[in-house]
Length: 178
Image 1: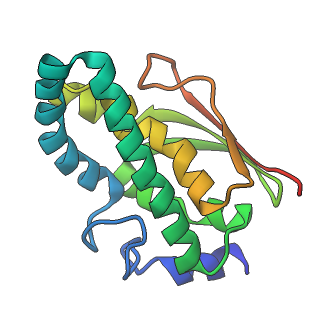
Image 2: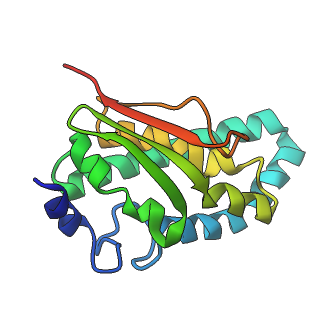
């Protein structure tokens, strides 16, 4: 399946899937959904940190959110009818909708998909909302688990994120051999 065929399979004219396999209401991009979720989860997690401690709260929230990400990755692969790396790479627009990310693509083929995020609207949004310390849980940790759910052979290596203070995020996806 070519990139344009895959894109037509997943996205409507506004860049959203009719079934929206990454969750949420059709018409809302991932960025807007994350903003809404952070408005609810941020105060809740801060209250949990006060009551149960930061470590336990972060650990539990990360476990729950990464499980959801794995499930959403599997749902997206099923919706697309394929789970190869090219299909994965061709369907990243919902996360970029509305200029949420500035991306510099470095490599894209059947075995590797590499890019740098040079501006992260998610990091900016969480900081402005007062949840910069939770942004990695809300968004960054999901990246690893979403790709695992999509295809367990897709591996992400990332050594830095804007959320944690780096000047860019370095995404390096590879498809492991059998």
